[in-house]
Length: 388
Ligand code: SF4
Image (cartoon, rainbow, N blue to C red):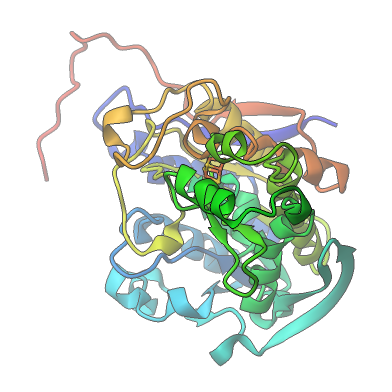
């Protein structure tokens, strides 16, 4: 079935507030009928409120608009994020006074308030959904789009998959990358060769295991799959292969499926703001320059369609190399621009494909531009307004 994704372009024709992204968010909320759907609902608004001195997360202007739409519809909104991001979020502008609703840690102090679900996947058997999320009757998932070191790209799936689980589950999701064996010590008994493998990686991504000197450990986050280490290693001793990277993305899809299963159908809405997209996620605690041009604002009932649409649009925009940290090695032939930063095996489409397989939505979508940009031409009259 074809899903609908509502889209607001980052471009304006006129210098008018009515054509800006917050105004387009209003149009998207209207088209999603958010107000009509939240009467008497307890609405969890899942945000990433950033960390430390990061400033590229969703500006409170957008968040307040969503909160006020929920209130206008008779819903009772509250905002959640993980405890270490909520702690200190007032310094980044996320206060109940500004946002017009409370901001809570999603699983309470020390992340002990949660519900356990069973789903066997590699190293994982149990998944713990944050209590404040599962207790809500309606979910508004509002994601900021950016890069990510484990999966190259974070948007609607990432905001739920990691952000709605407690720390223990988030760690286990990251550990899925290590489930499939990649080091075969019997093929490399020489310790000096092991050291050469370590020395070959410019990113410090492959190290000798700190608990066992015969084992190697790959930090998959900084690994961009350049294969320098594989060329130094005896054949077959070290494998850098897609399965170790795809595991994280498949686990993200499962995690999302579990959280969404706690809401009735039709009681989850997904929004995403694709501006100031940095190479790393908003947990890093600082903001670097945007690595690609702004792509706009998106909304849908279908999380698969939403992330697919964002990926398809951002795929059309080249990276801005001069905005990338000099320590990042761009790989032009790695596919999607975010994969060019993080490596081809971190194909950002894996999560949407797997999400579709789990029945979370459809990759087949119709993109509806909520306010198509008129081509007024440079000489159009009335383009200028005075600052108020
Ligand atoms: S593939 Fe490249 S980045 Fe990854 S561990 Fe090996 S040398 Fe490092």
